[in-house]
Image 1 (cartoon, rainbow, N blue to C red):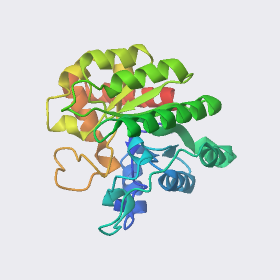
Image 2 (cartoon, rainbow, N blue to C red):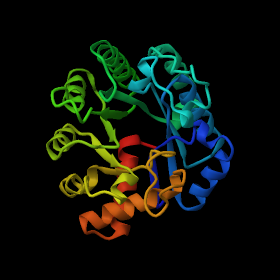
Image 3 (cartoon, rainbow, N blue to C red):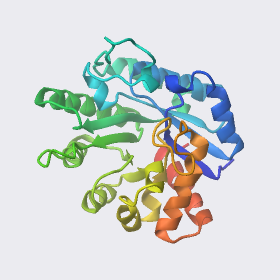
Amino acid sequence: MTPKYIDIHSHVNFKAFDEDRDEVIRRALANDTWIINVGTQVDTSQKAVEMANQYPEGVYAIIGLHPIHTGASYHDEKELGEGGKEFTSRGESFDKESYRELLKDPKANKKIVGIGECGLDYYRCTPESIAKQKKDFISQIELANEFNKPLMLHIRNNPEDKIKNAYKDSLEILKQHAKVKGDVHFFAGTIEEAKSFVDFGFALSFTGVITFTKDYDEVIRNTPLDMIMSETDSPYVTPTPYRGKRNEPSYVREVVKKIAEVKNLPEEKVAKAIIENAKRVFTF
């Protein structure tokens, strides 16, 4: 079966969906929407795989370590649950063997369609944390190379820092180490940065943010349709007209509609192209 829509980056594996996870997934599938749930640590990666194995079709997993979680400094209740005032992320080091074990399971391997979300996040960083992020990023690239899985990239700059550039640094690391391609999730860089990743063979995906700001319009217009994908990043960045609600994969249609509007193309054509792109990149 081929779906009409796909959410290539969601987090229904997060605590925010503990009360109605199956209902959310079934609602997406009923709306002809497939889902890729993305891990951010070992536990959320394992959860993504467990969920993918529960459904015969249309639910997939990506496993890896988010750059923010390479340091013990970050707390998001939607991801980790209530942890008390003293709670922080445990600061996971990328344990390649733990992730390799998930990939060695033949059943799980078919449902694991990528490695990530990995990359560089300069929003909250120190020289020490950047060095740790780069080390763990390279380790995840090596794992992706080993199992021939595409990469799901998380790249974010600090808008107040005009010197460090996470997009430039990530691309340099990829050129040195990557034998696989993938997707730049929640792309928020410049037209020039977009072109550099597309020229290197990486697709760009966009979220519901594009439905309530024009900041991404020029990048979308200038990116070839065969290098664009749709995502929600749920439970975050809910698109119009659902602003104020928790985001979920069935809302990805609003992202597709907006991409079509910005590119002045029929929605059907854009939706079909995005499915073809996702199947090419993630080979499911």
